[in-house]
Amino acid sequence: MKDTFTHQGLRKQLVATLIKKGITNQAVLDAINKIPRHLFMDSGFIDHAYVDKAFPIAADQTISQPYTVARQTELLDVKQGGTVLEIGTGSGYQTAVLIELGLKVYSIERQNELFKKTKLFLPKIGYRPKKLIFGDGYIGYKSQAPFDGIIVTAGAPFVPKPLLAQLKIGAKLIIPVGDTSQVMTVFKRTSETAFEKEEFGEFKFVPLLEDKN
Ligand code: SAH
Image (cartoon, rainbow, N blue to C red):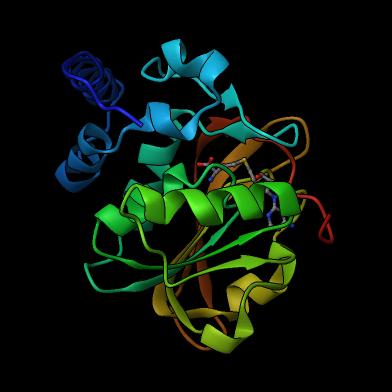
């Protein structure tokens, strides 16, 4: 579990790439500069850890592309100390970025193998989410709702109603919507019954699947 000067140097280059691609939020850039992404990947892919690409992790899933993680986190825009829900824990990399920003994180994963692996791994490198949940993200996490923000890190064929219902007024749901490719969509809750919708371009995610496995 080493983080060498070489890794740190590669991270600086990755941050420079993200700035070129349009990421401006300094706290997000600082988090990416700090977190050893190579430790979240299987050994076979470590050489690629600081390339701006998604890579395979366990259970046929992927660790999201750094640009995607940065963009979603920037769009989430929750102040330090806020409570957020993440759907799709996966490797835990996005979770670590949220924790690094000073957020209280609840994160749901439907693949038991990944859930168990990431639950052991995150505290080992000093990241403590409020709770990792083995379950189905389509239903959200009612017992801790409402949230200051919700981020979905898998491609959703439709927008799950419970996620909209679990937002505080003023909070946002960041969700990639679509089947083969997805449109990054932001829903901001403006009242008990009203939401503003905004779209932020095409992305590619593994699918948000129903039920746990
Ligand atoms: N945030 C992760 C991205 C992992 S890819 C990271 O940074 O590594 C998306 C993840 O969503 C996968 O691990 C997949 O198993 C999970 N997923 C898919 N459908 C889900 C659902 N309904 N509920 C919870 N997790 C789900």
